[in-house]
Image (cartoon, rainbow, N blue to C red; front, top):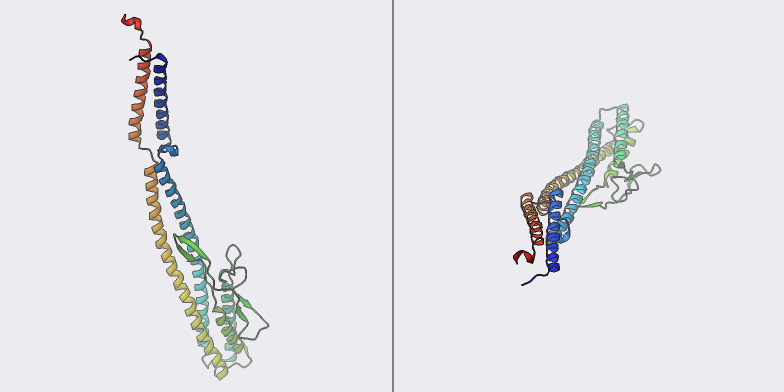
Length: 303
């Protein structure tokens, strides 16, 4: 069988080009550390990488959301705890005020301390975040949680004007967490304390007076109710933070698993690739030598 010179040269040229292309590809894999330079290098592997990359992006977003929500919940918990402390101090004063041995001046002095505690609770209830949004107004964050009307009757001057809707944040696949808490109910305590302050400030106030004693007793009951109300919310916030911590740890494990899978799919097997590269380089050198040897042959050499 005879092979035309042109056909032979074409075969050799194609072989050289294919070997050189493969050498270039292997060299790029070793240099970049990435096994897949083009989707066509491994279509199935490329699809798996795309899916894992999307999942990893979602996991990262979930973890970022969890971190943000945990900070907000911790702030909410701290502010609610501050209100509970104020109410606790107010209760101590109310119990003291109920003692019939106190003079009118004693009761008036106690009322001034109650004013400070009342105003402190109101201030905290209407606290704003770093973006200037009210924290305890539900989703109505553009307005204060509790409104004060100086013209209203004593005992009804404080009104909750927010709502009880939740600001929901996605923290996992199908998992959400409320990032806010409302303080609807605190206005009841403020109104009761407002009544106590008025009663204690009255000229000649006497805790032994049935009407005054009833107002103080109502203030103590209202304080107990307010403290229980806020303490329950604090407990819920603490439980939510524990759940978020567990979820964050689970997502970290998923992220670690995804990173490992991505690394296996993307990373070049240096040892195997080096062996392949050496093989193609040897084959390329052999092809050049063979081409040069055959190119120097002539039919006259065998005549």
